[in-house]
Image (cartoon, rainbow, N blue to C red; front, side, top):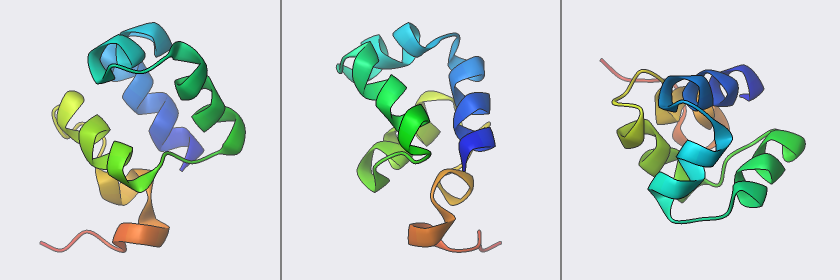
Length: 69
């Protein structure tokens, strides 16, 4: 999950860019990194923000399970 979050942040540009686009603080995004997971509702939003370069399934497999094809 941590690798997926780092890839999503890199895809969007930075922690600050993710925070700004989602209307939250950079500290909130940094806490995701520290904790090692993204809240499930934010995982969906982050998936959309990075245009599915990183999916909710990668960000939270414990919640969303394996990606169905």
